[in-house]
Length: 464
Ligand SMILES: Cc1cc2nc3c(=O)[nH]c(=O)nc-3n(C[C@H](O)[C@H](O)[C@H](O)COP(=O)(O)OP(=O)(O)OC[C@H]3O[C@@H](n4cnc5c(N)ncnc54)[C@H](O)[C@@H]3O)c2cc1C
Image (cartoon, rainbow, N blue to C red):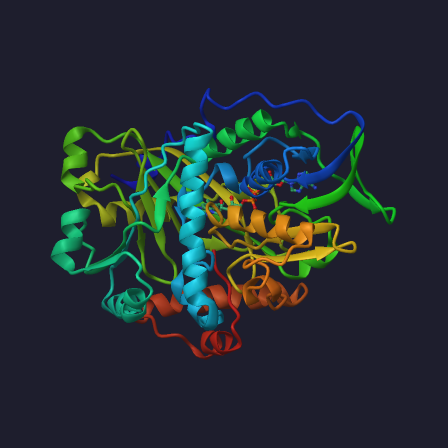
């Protein structure tokens, strides 16, 4: 189908949030309140922090302040790949923290196992399916990348299955696939909005006080407690945890390390039985192709296909703006790529198109820290892979706030900070040139130009 025609009736909103199951917002903070811990941000990061704080110490008073609605931002509009990796994939972790890689991989799998157990414990229905992720190669050079770490994967005891062209097409039938690697247990598919709303329910059940539509405008430290000021109230906190993603940070130093990058996705209408049979996909894995600019795609409960990624857009000036959530040029490109991948689905059209903003940092995986004499902790910079990793980051924040030394807080990944981005306008120039270079690499068998090789050597980058 012509991409323009296929998109003609697509709603301009995130599919996952467009449901009557979305709960009504809880009340605003009006007046003054006190708490042992105030969590700022009602995405996965803040929700996990609040829930686990109560689980660690049911006696403490925990408040969560969300500026808009629970899960409205990246948390409620992502691909729903809930991954074990804490390092934005094995290769990135291996490049940066080779000494810890075994530990990081193990802790990632434990984190995903614990997510699964928590969902069972609180009866959270978010269509959690531990199907794994199928990494597919669509160009010969990508086959080399997929097989690069097989020895290490075996040594670490990770559950990956290499596949040739025939095997991978038997899983998911696309004429573009040349081979693949099925990471079998390191990833689950979820409905991210229902996961966020389920965590909200769990928080309320254990006694977290949640206030929605309560943006924190300022943070004043009086030496003993920290006052968080919202438009109609103040929350006085003994401790503060920031799970504020890429939004203008309450801690000014964070702005040097984060840039907002927009990522876009489409949702198809449900497939008929015959259409689904034409693709196979009986094991319902998430799929990601392996270019520098990659697509991610997966099935929903009712056998739609979510199709996203490829363009990672930084708008010069680095603002977060609602108007950036729609980008027709990208939607048309994505729809074209969809039909190239699945020509047998040429009659399938799209019901939703949307974008969301990602907290990108130069090391591609979250960083952590403390301020205000150790009474405030933060975890940000998940760079497009935070559905699972935010729970690990929440645990790090709680460890840091408690002053405990744990296996988590001893990790170099937790102790080190990423390299900051240069200030504007140099920042925009550098990022746009990097984006151009990445697109060039994909068009030239993955060959990285001098600029990308220099960034690689410096351990720097730009990604979604
Ligand atoms: C299109 C898209 C696809 C993605 N796909 C995947 C995927 O498949 N798998 C994966 O692992 N990751 C994916 N991601 C990334 C993932 O969604 C994020 O890493 C994760 O949701 C981050 O959660 P968070 O809580 O840190 O941030 P957010 O979800 O951005 O939440 C931050 C919250 O803090 C609130 N806030 C900010 N400042 C204040 C303030 N001053 N006062 C009060 N509240 C405040 C905001 O309103 C917001 O609700 C994707 C992201 C996008 C945009």
